[in-house]
Image (cartoon, rainbow, N blue to C red; front, side, top):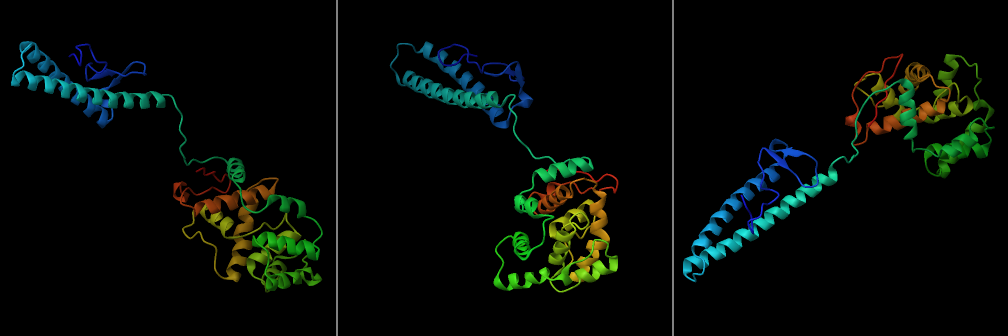
Length: 296
């Protein structure tokens, strides 16, 4: 068929295998979008109408009668409609050409080795100020440093009441030996002050033996072990039991020379699980010998 001035339009091609401007080869009709397929069919119909109108104008050439005027008006209208359809098709093909070979980001969930899990989630860590941790861990626990540590843990300046309460940790009675028995550690954690903060105080004294514990790392552990209830217990006694009997053994199995990296990885992963993207993570139980990585 011929469009407009009688020259072939680049869209006047077989509908089953169509060459597209800006792309190599052909595009199968079945590979087109519904909009493009509809536009090409509309163009075919307009070209038919265009051809018939031209033939009619040839027959009424030189005439100024009402019929000839009607054909000339119809010819102009069809010509404009063809131009609009061709412009829409050109736009579609430019978009296709621009996207051809381009790479666009998508989020996928996959699994990996234990080391890959730690490496991946540790790199995404954006929680507490890491410089403060690295500069102060293992240093003498003076009153000033104790306040600084708990302000770090609190995430904001301590209230006057909290600061006064925290200073009790500077007492010699609040020290625990590295070789303390399991019963002594349990009794130490069950003292007043709350389970999470007392576990943190235990970590500050012996960071290589007692990891930090909170809602996010608990959630990460529960997920990796395939538990249905992933939230941290409410009562202090239950928190302490879970920490000593479940979380510590779980943490130790994640063999990594840098315990802080494991802590950051679990904290980041556990926090991700309660985000709007948490449902993307496959619910796979981590085997004790090889916990999987879960990437967003």
